[in-house]
Image 1 (tube, one colour):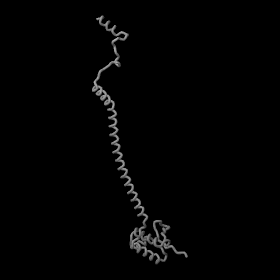
Image 2 (cartoon, rainbow, N blue to C red):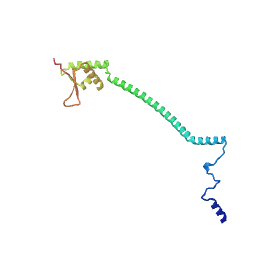
Image 3 (tube, helix red, strand yellow):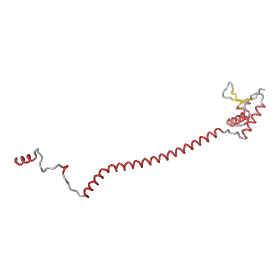
Image 4 (spheres, rainbow, N blue to C red):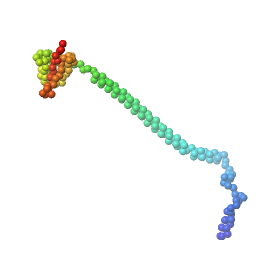
Length: 177
């Protein structure tokens, strides 16, 4: 057995053998079909990750396009809603600026207050007395007084009682000539 090991060791000497050829210099024989198959497999193996990446990017692009379309639709809806809100605000401001014209009953009450005030010697009356005279509630009295003061600006004044700040009086302002 020692002889076999010695012969094998001597076969692997440091000097190169005459019949030895390096693997990079070896000649092989392939048919054109085999070569085409090898090249095709190599190309497919090389481009497969790129194709997967392209497919992934196409999916992401499609998802982003859908999301973008949804955002555009939402933005258009918001723009429409804001336009409607602006129209409503404009209409409300216009309605607030319109002067409320007193009705016939309110004008009639204002005339009755005017006649009543001119018939009094002191030319003043408490709101409580005016409510009793007209037989109306405080809201209708206030509307009638507002109409009276609008029709005759500077002729009437609302005065508070000095002792009881809750009591108010309507007074005729004397004309200075």
